Length: 257
Image (cartoon, rainbow, N blue to C red):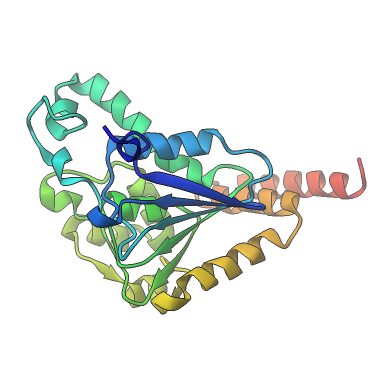
């Protein structure tokens, strides 16, 4: 096993308040394995309070083409494969998947805003990683696809909830059931993408967005992000109460209390 295998082909770079997380397996279009998800989870577990923005990107011409092909094996001896997973029994398999999901869910943690920089393909697990982020900037040749149902599976890396939040029930259902790709222009019109830019401008656009997110006071951004995330689930009375409580906390801090 190489060092890259062990760390799931995930590398990080810190630049002030911005942490960049890169899938670094370009020769395999950044295909993911359970080691990738464990490495992503470890990044989330190690965040400190000074990180305000997390940028997720893929090295090379593709954000991520999804699962490593070896994982589709039904041979129970294939590490991390579908055969090994099904051999754990229902409870064991669900607990294993829960651990995989933790590598994605932290991208909406309190205190950070996450941005996916998507070029080329974001397929399956790659699409779900992009969806796990708060914001997405796509290149004009990018597409997002969730083909799991066409393979007899389901999206299980937090993708269904985040997609439905972004585009609504009918569009989310159609995309998940048909497995068709959503090109960048369509993703922008749906609100799935925050911006679409030429490939040469991706890094600059993401840097500009990260700078805009870090410009307001950290406490205000943290509270506002929490409110917006909760708004899709809260009833109006609950959300109004959350706004009141957050504003009182902000006023107290601004007053030096």
